[in-house]
Amino acid sequence: MLRSMYSGISGMKNFQTKLDVIGNNIANVSTYGFKKGRITFKDMISQETQGASAPQGGRGGTNAKQVGLGVDTASIDNIQGQGSLQNTGRNLDLAISGDGFFVVKDGNQTYYTRAGNFYLDGDGYIVNADGMKVQGTKGPIQISKNGLKEFSIGKSGEITGVDASGKTVNLGQIQIATFNNPEGLEKAGGTLFQQSPNSGPAFQSNPGQNGAGELAVGELEMSNVDLSEEFTSMIEAQRGFQANSRIITTSDQILEELVNLKR
Image 1: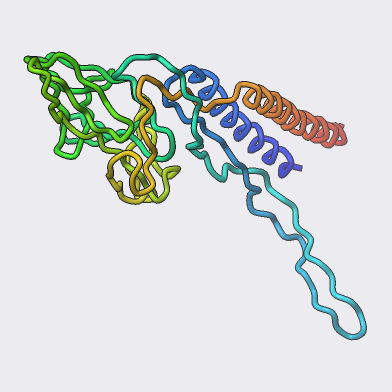
Image 2: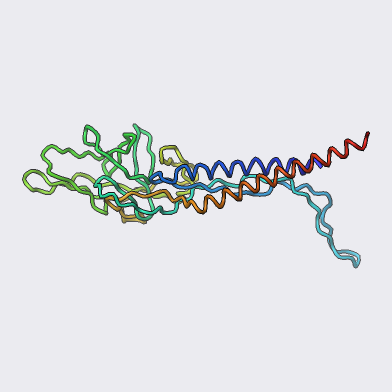
């Protein structure tokens, strides 16, 4: 009898985790560059009450008799599917059309992101909203506006400017990082990812080369969360939680009947 109660407890616990993942997805539905999470389940160990037997003596074999002991979390995945692109018309808003991540640094710590809402700081460096410097082929990219009339970014990541004399000046080259297993990256908050032992090392290249996506200038990548899918999953998780709570209630009622037999 207690086995059913513990199975119900494991179900409630894991459906609560599913609701946590869904809640985070819905909360970030408008977060640029956000990648949704997904939880998968697996059954826990099964208790064997009778082993399997082989056919012998003219009698056929029998299968094992096993009772499952509940559910456990198999994985919580980062779904790295492409989000839709939103046009902004701003020349420092960048999106990656395809695979890869922008590379930003906070001191000596390297992070990777799909959120391309970038800015210029007081020293002319291209930074993200938290002040982390965007990396190019020669390190952080600095654009000095002294003597420049304008600058632009191409879909291959090249940054060019026009000086006061009308001469074209090469200002830098944005790099894109790709991984063998991008879903193995660890979320670091702030729509940032960091390398993990299972993501593999980062391979940096120019946009559009070696499997890296091209840049979409003047656009931002939206979250890849689908609200209709999330609400459906939320209903499923709610019903699963309710059903497992009913298992505990029913098991408790049966135990109560057993206790009443003594009276």
